[in-house]
Amino acid sequence: MKKLYFTSLLVMMVAPAVAAPTHTSSTFPSNGKMLEDYTYQNQATVTNLKVSEGTATTTANYAECPTAFPNSDEGAESTDECYTACTVSDFPANSHIASVTGKNYQGAGVTDTCAIATCDTGYTLNNGACNANVIQITWADASAEDIAANEAGTVTYGGDIRTPRKAVHKPGKIFTGWTFVNPLDVLMENVDTNGSAYTPTSADGSTSWSATFNYGTITGTSLCSSTAGTSTGATGTPDESGTGDTKHCWCRMDNFTPTNGATISAQSLWVFNFSSSSAGECAWYCAANCGYYAQNSSALRGGLFGSIQ
Image (cartoon, rainbow, N blue to C red; front, side, top):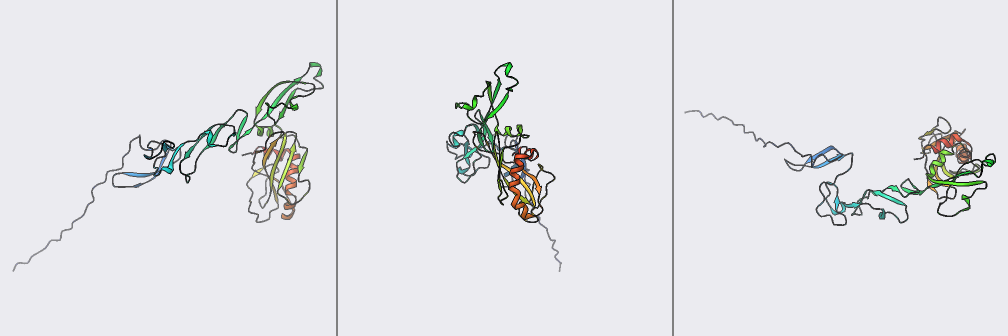
């Protein structure tokens, strides 16, 4: 009898080779972006490209975008993501806006990116709004003989040049011209000039303060922190949690109201003022000291005015 011998055959299932993903310069990478990650949709096509940095492109609009919102970002999957360019009319009337940027999306659940780019003449962009500039009026001596009694110079006036006011008349002077200036520039131009009043005038445990000058009034907030500053007028990042030995007084300016002008946002960094002997003393005196030193200390004003965000 013959013995039968069986040879085992090992059959290996080999998957077909998958071509490497390819792209053309017109489709990838996205303009101004860098590749961050991707996933496979099938063996030969790369999809769901994740990109970062730069500005999104609109090389392929979503097919169902309506006429009113004709554009879309790459990868848009619903009409909510269709957008049109923002316009000045997207902002409240009389906002004094010259031009805007950004995208106005059709879907209420998609955040618009509309932002002010430039303001009308006589207005300055500050914290997302166009604020009226103050007017710097130039005066000259009425005559050479009056030089000793009447110095030539400028005065900052926070009104509207189109509105006749007595403020544009100055005894012994003649009006020579005017220019618009950013109201916040007025602060640094007068950083060495002390004010005439401050609040609160006595320790009351509050956290709001103000200081008044001949060019306007500044208002702000005080903070007692466990973080000590290096010197009066130095900016820093104090701990705002209220924990620890909160005996160090910090001041922040929040708003500026030019004389005869509208209040504008002028938030500074936190500026160190002084260290108290205890947390309780700081809480009681800090706001009053912020107001007092804002009125009377060029060092504190330098920190406040020089760090407006």
